Image 1 (cartoon, rainbow, N blue to C red):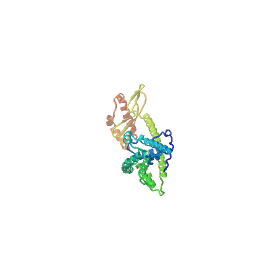
Image 2: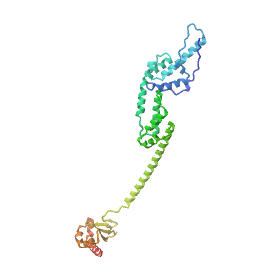
Image 3: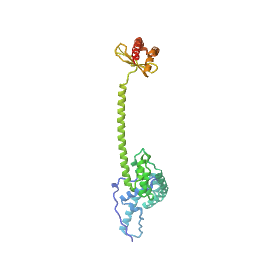
Image 4: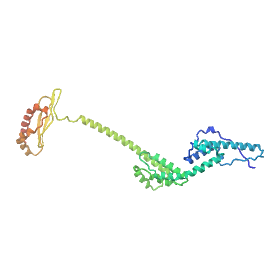
Length: 326
């Protein structure tokens, strides 16, 4: 006659973290969490053990006590599993008699349905592309999670394949670094690749901050220079009155590339005038004879009419004297 041993249960109060409620999706992850949880409670053996049988004529008190203890532990194990199911699944499986039967029923149904998940994960891995909007290290972690899901589905993916896949999925901004890694003669491990990617990303982040500070400093300097240039800007070519003093315009332009420079004088007297002609010395003499015809082309703003005669006189006299002596 086989003997039945009784194992004291661990205190459930010491284990606060419970698996998430299983609703029919992600069965393998829930199953692993549930198995660990039951193991910490010393109840995992009831998932594989058959219930003991006691004959009617058996009068062994110790044996009957051990059977009662086993049934109690199996009851706890079964209800721990049921309480980890959502309400719909709880109603479906609450009539199952033992923990082993419940565990096998869930595994048979949902592990078979997870068979199609492998193809989905493979497609997710093949379609994954890194983007510039996210950090490289966070995207490497996402790829590693997908690879771990594939391994959990029973697929064999060696480390060199993982390294090559991560390098190939680097974004366009990392094209030069990608080519550098491809031409490495030494075969990198996954850990070495992650270290290199982290160093490169930190270096790029530091360079970007330095460049940003330099651009901000340059923009600030340009803004200051532009502001100072506006302050030094030459006043418009018109006469204005400031504190009862006339500020005369600096330049009056003739036709035929002839220019009159007027030195501003801050009083009520007309300004002094200098004549300049663009051209050869022969044009200077010709200008003397044609000056009277060109004077009519002078432009005088309305506020300039009060001194028109004085300026005409100064232009004729000083221009003729200056040009005829050239």
